[in-house]
Image 1: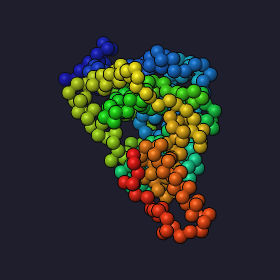
Image 2 (image 1 turned 30 degrees about the vertical axis):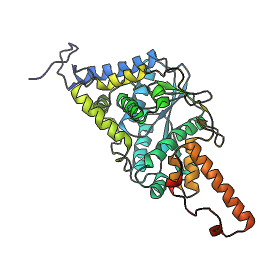
Image 3 (image 1 turned 45 degrees about the vertical axis):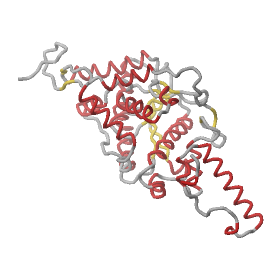
Image 4 (image 1 turned 135 degrees about the vertical axis):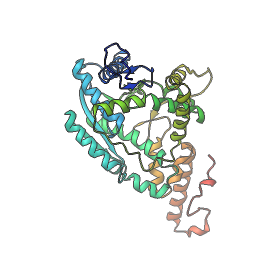
Length: 355
């Protein structure tokens, strides 16, 4: 027997909301979904009229729905925003090249201009080449660090005022769990913020902060949106996957677990006397960093020196080791000595570093 929509519109329900358990018809679900995102935007005052906003677009369900919703709400409520799609080409054959085709179709479907920046042009490396060097165990570290900076660089090129990303409630709850497991107090303190920004950087906001991933999927499905659904070919071993599996198990027991974890993260505070890293500027690239040299530059330096694993430890130790190695090599060249006669390893064993 059909179930009527919980709103009293007398239409038959087509879904049960994961967040609230309400049975809704298609039209009521669309309206509730859109109004909740609108409330998140207005309550947090994410935008001001005439803002130039870059939508981080990957072609996946989250960014595709985000682009559609931003266009819809901008027109419906007259936000007065100028929108642009910003995509990052990581150089993953068989994955990113296909997803970018979806973004290019979205550009035409939503009449929003598109800008694509690539790892190859920014760093001189693609993820395919990086995986050849590092393997499948730590490749997500490289990709995550490079992609965050690539978005900043692309936004700077476009001269936008703000960036919006498709991070949803599930993503944020997973990040809270990951930071707890890693004991990363600094990131735990800021990972639930709906807007993240440091002095001199372009603010990033998350309009989907309280939106469940399942509802984003259902919205895309019922709206018949054009999105790319294949998982990254290099992501099966990602640490986030374990946090995601744990969160899904919690959600089966208690539907509100996702929002509960986010609220818990928002309520965390650091006791007095705990030293936290301070944001500064990278000495090499000029981007924001909590270290003299940012993680992206350290990883890139390791790749360029043929020692990619050097970037996976503590930044200060790695920089010190690379500096000593450069000084030693310079001394060898100056004296034209045989490298076998001095204590410089031709290859560096990662176990030799004191992390």
